[in-house]
Length: 211
Ligand SMILES: [Zn+2]
Image (cartoon, rainbow, N blue to C red):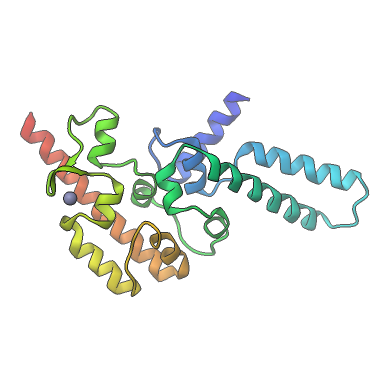
């Protein structure tokens, strides 16, 4: 069972092009992959209902089972202690999972998981000794929240995105805006890509300076 879970998780991570350090909970949500335990439960529920003489079609049984598993998954996501940055961006699974547009790429994954070239992340995994923002100074942690929504280094990119989508972006609004229309999703993906690429360049530069 562990082996299957591990393989399944790797698939979720590949889909999200994610880092190995992202929790299972967050990786599955970002990738939009129903947890294996729920798929197994769905199959069992469909089988039980069919055996029990249900008049519903197989498609209807599947839809009912999927709704139940989304409900259980949502409860687990609400109660989990893992992937809380992702949770603050994507608290409601249904809207995210049932969207009709939007691919999650490498850079969006970093923004949505908080696992990327943020100093808080790099420090947590032993790649940096400090976690404060080099532009904003000590006391201000360079994490995903700061970089995406606050840091003045990315004012231009942020303003461009906000002009494009016609709204202020924040932890609460980013994902709902992305889900509102394909163009908004693309604009947010470009924003994440531009910001994450810049962070990567800055990290390389810091490394070279200290070497
Ligand atoms: Zn900053």
